[in-house]
Image (cartoon, rainbow, N blue to C red; front, side):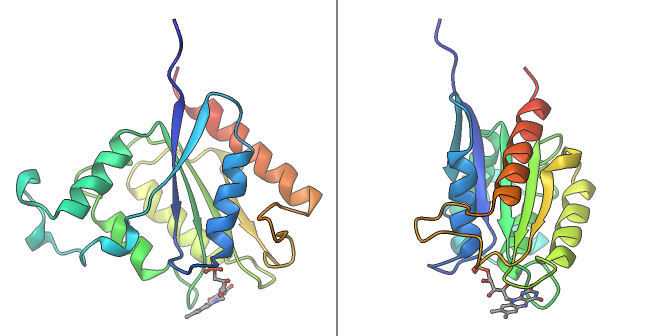
Amino acid sequence: MQQRSIIVLGISGSLRTESINTRLLSSIGGMMPTGMELRMYQGLASLPHFSPDLDGDEAQVDKAVREWREELRAADACVICTPEYARGVPGSLKNALDWVVSSGEFVSMPTAVVSASPHPDGGSTALHSLTMTLKMMSAAIPEEAAMAVPFASRIMGDDGSVTDANTESSLRQLVRSLLHTIPN
Ligand SMILES: Cc1cc2nc3c(=O)[nH]c(=O)nc-3n(C[C@H](O)[C@H](O)[C@H](O)COP(=O)(O)O)c2cc1C
């Protein structure tokens, strides 16, 4: 019997068309072994601003929010790549996460987190903050699956490939760690 693919939901914290983080996410997808498939979440910009007043009965919740939760429930794991904005997590990504605090889709979800920035510290403050938020939501973040990528604009080829051997090696390790965290 043919086994179904492992579905990894890729979430970019950047809405920018030429985003380094979105390109990096695609590169990570290309490092996944056969049987592991990256699906890009495309709905970040469609989510309404979170308010507990708009949450509650699932049938009444905004369609974009229902779809966000459904995509998470259909996934075996997640990879989040995000920029750092003003030493924090971009508002649209944090908004998306706020929508799933109570509904619990991240509980025990194997999750890899990456921050990529042209700056020398690679957006590590945003990475730390994002990791804290996900841990609060009981996501399963393996030790080698949280990574800041400094000088990110320099280590990406025009085709989106990662040109720095050490970064590529760490990203491949991140994929392996994520895979090992997914229950059989
Ligand atoms: C409003 C704004 C704030 C930023 N703040 C930071 C920051 O605090 N730390 C950092 O490393 N880069 C910061 N940057 C630079 C981003 O890392 C850079 O624009 C990066 O390319 C954004 O990621 P993206 O290419 O995936 O969109 C900021 C950029 C913008 C537009």
